[in-house]
Image 1 (cartoon, rainbow, N blue to C red):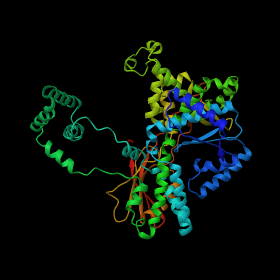
Image 2: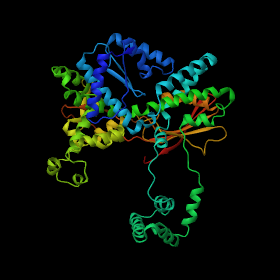
Image 3: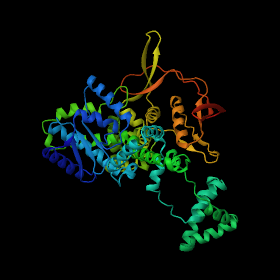
Image 4: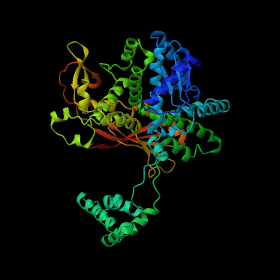
Amino acid sequence: MELIGQHAKKIMEGCKQRARDAGLRFQDDTLEYIVTNRDLLELSPKIMIPTLYDYWVHDVEVLKGKGKYELYPGNPYETVINTRPPISFYNDNNPDWLNVMIFYHVIGHIDFFQNNVFFEHTHDYDFTGEALSDKRLIAKLRSEKGRWVDYVLEFARGIDNLVSFHRELSRIAPPAAASGSGPINFYFDVFLQSMKKVNITDYIKEIERYNACMRAYGKLGEETFLSDTAVKHPEFKAVYQKSLQKKPETRMDLLKYLMLHSEFLNKEENDWMKSILQVIRKTSLFFQPQIRTKIMNEGWASYWHEILFMADDRIRGHEVDFARINAGVTAMPRVGLNPYALGMRLFYFIEEMADKGKYAFDFSRIRDARERETFDAKTNAGRRYLFDVRKNMDDFLFVRTFVDQDFIDAHRLFVVGKRINAAKTAWEYYVKSRNAEDYRDMLIDGLYHPPHIEIDPNKTENRVLYLVHRFEHKPLVKDYITNTMIGIEYLWGGPVKLETSEVAGTQAPSAYGVFSVGGTPGKEMPEAPEIKWQRVLYTMEKRRMTRRILYDMENV
C-alpha cells in the first residue's frame, strides 16, 4: 500500500477545485493510496480501517474473501473512509479518465461525510488514530488475560447494534430551545396537553390569549398571561414548581448501562473488561451513520460523479467508455436493490421537482391532475434544495419523503412477489404492486433497523437485569437469543430477563416481496393471513434459558 503518484494527485486536486466550484464543501487535505488485491481482501473485514483491532472473525472473512476472489475475481473501483483527513483506496491500473470519474465519486462521499448531520459526532476526532490506540490496548490485554479478551469481545459485539445512536446525536447537537420562558413552555407543552388534555379548539384559544397579551403588554405580556392563568388554573404554579424538582429521565443503551451498573464489571479485577466494551461501543457509534445513509451516500456520490465528469474537459474522447462503466454502476436491477442507482435517480428527481416548485405549499393545494402535471414555477431552486436534503436526512427520511407515485411512474418501478408454481415445480415472479406506498414500505423494510431494547429500571432489582423489547411488528431472530443472553448474563454478573413479542403459531404468507423495475403486470395474490402475536419472557440464569408466555396480544 502506497500513496498515489504526483500525476494522479494533480488530477485529484483538479477534481477538488471543480467540485468546490459546483458547490460541494469539504476540508482540503485528503490521502489517496494505491492498494493491491491482497490489501483489499485484508482490509474489507475491518471496514477499510487499517488500524482497527484484530479479531478472529476478521481472519475468517479474509479467508472467505480469498476463496470468493479466486472464483469471481473483481475489486471495487474505490473505497473511502470517513477519517481526518479522509482516506481513499484505489487500484493501481486505472487510466486517467477513469480516475477522474472515481475521484469525483470519492469527493461526493467526502462532502456527504462532512456535511450530513448524522455524521456530526465523527467530525471532531480522527477515528483511525483512536482505533490504533484501541488496537494496542486489546493486544496488550490479550498478552495479559489470554482468551478471556476474545470472550468479552464476542459478548460485547453481540449487542453492539443496541447503542443509543440518536440520543448520542441529541447530546452533541441538542434541539433548539423553544422561544417562550420555562413556565410558558410547560403550560402549553405539558399542562394543557398531558394534564388537562384540552381539545384543539380550547388549545388554540389559549394560544390566541397568549398572543393578545404579548401584543397589548409587550415585555409584560408573559407576566400578565401567567397572572390570568393563575386565576383560571390555581394549581398551575404548584404543578410547575414540582416539575422543576423532578430529575429528567436519563436512558442508557445496554452497553453503557452495563459499564456503569454491572457489579461484576466494576470489580477491580474485571475493570479491564469495561475498556473493551468502551471500544466496541465507540466503534459501533462511529459506523452507525454510514449504515443508516447507504442509499443517500452512494446516490449523492453517483449524482456528482456523473454531473462533474460530463462537464470536465479532461475526458474528451472517453464519453463512451464512461457510459459503459457508469451504466454498470448505476443500472437499476430487475430484482434486488442498487443503492447507487436508486439514490442517484432520487436526487435527479428531487432536483427537477424543486426546480419546478413542486415542493412548495402552493403546489400541494392543487388537486387537478392535469394542472399538477404541467405545473412549473421555474424557481430553479433544485440544486440548493438538494444540498438541504443532503445535510438533514438519512435513508429512512429520504425514502419516506421523496419516493412518491410520480417517482414510481417515471421509472416504471414496482414490487414483485415470489411464489411456487406447483405445475412447473419452480419459483415464479409476478407484479404485486405498482403503488408508491407499497414500494416505499418495501424499501423501508430493507433498511437497517436494530431492535429497540431498553432496560426497565422498575423491574431491574435483586441483581436481575430486566430488558424490554419494544414491539414494532418485527420479532427477534430466535437463533441468536440464547447465545446473546449468555453473553449479557456474563457481563451483568447475574440473571437476565428479556420481554419480547413473538408470532403465536406458524402462520406465514405464501409469497414475499422483492424489489424490481420494468416488466409486465402479473397475477394478484391472496392477502397474507393475519399474524397473531404473544408477549413472552426469556430468562437466562446460570447459562440456562427458560421461556414463558406472558399473554396474547390483541389488536396490535
